[in-house]
Image (cartoon, rainbow, N blue to C red):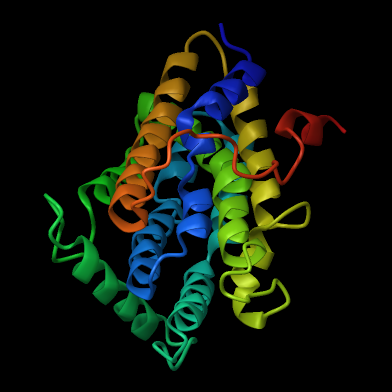
Length: 281
């Protein structure tokens, strides 16, 4: 049977964990429309990961009360982050364009509308692109993984736990560090973590950020229920997420960054300690 450290190692070894999309973003310096299209697909995916659906209640129903509390903490922490992500996206789009594309960065609907326009222009001819929602096939697959939180049967509940662990690990160790790398550290946009429009990134980054605590919560929840019976379902849930997000990164990298770069070396050092170390200290 896999231990929790084995499961953590499995997630970290998946190609999603070291996908070069953010490194390519900083190297290619995409045009404004590409920046908007990237943000549209990313924000749509991120929005799907925030609601808990029936997941916390399903955990309670199957006797996992403390685990339910840990996941509910994550859900509550993620509430209202959509507007902050839109503000950051509009701010970066304005800087990429060198002009005011999004005049009111606090108008979430207006900013997201501009991002959607960029996506439709650049990705709309891709096979299976959903013109109604502005989503690639790959984005829809990644979002569909989180629709599983509406299911309350025992197997689905453990799969959702596996998905939660992989999500929080990837968010803490790949997605947020990747965004910081290409949006701030690269210097492309002249953006700083001190800029109020970058508050979304500040909220999630590093030792004081939300993502580290989310990873700890997910690690603790999975650790307490991982056994010979649940291992398979938890692993399936993790892989469903990892495979689908890697597929989304692949199409965005190919269609918008056109990097053609080979390799998937680690983008930046991890933002935090391993969760087992964080929990045990």
